Figure 1 (cartoon, rainbow, N blue to C red):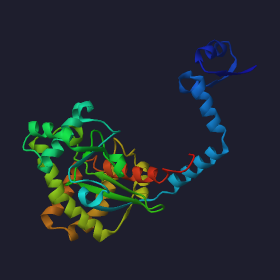
Figure 2: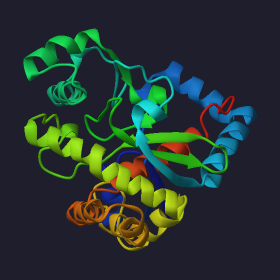
Figure 3: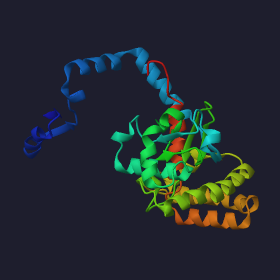
Figure 4: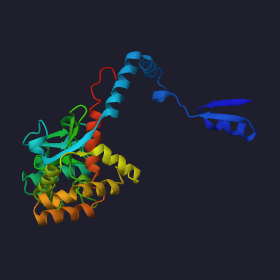
Length: 290
């Protein structure tokens, strides 16, 4: 006797114990067992138009070729970013409902921009600012990631569709704005990234030309990265790519300090991989009926 058991695995255990050949199918009622919603999903799944549109969307994702183009101030780069606009991670949310780390990051960005002299003034000003989801502006940032006009952002373009995506710089582990830290040490590092690191790396990118992120990520995955919490290989591959042109394109001290920062920050590539994923997935966005 050959048995297929659907759902609860406890029904299969005594059969196996008695020597039966049992195939366990991991299944549970969709959408929490709600009949109306389940029926709607079944109709959509059986709709040939939806299936064709989904296939087309997946083809766009598979055909995407994200390229790293530039590193520029957000105010010069991100469409629709107003002079007093801050972009945040996640969906739309009012200041009053934000979690502590996101509030801390917003307040830090306000002080970084010079809109408020201290934390108390920044928290008072925050609800009056234009706070928008980064995704509404083709942008993305990790954790409680915040992008303000003066921050440098990576510019990534999908060569297949022309879709653009942007992400801020990774500050490294420890006290960082994306965790809600906003002390003098955090703001000093952010200013150094904007004033020293970003111009040096931008000069190197201009000299080197676009970097194929799909190829770099594929190689990093083969070396053990997953490009989220482990980015050692991807960061090293990027540093290897940039180092020869960085030392020729940027002032000596800035090049040396920038390479030292890359060497000390194994998570650096994370934000670049996020922008690459954003450009890749946005290439499939808007496929009718998908």
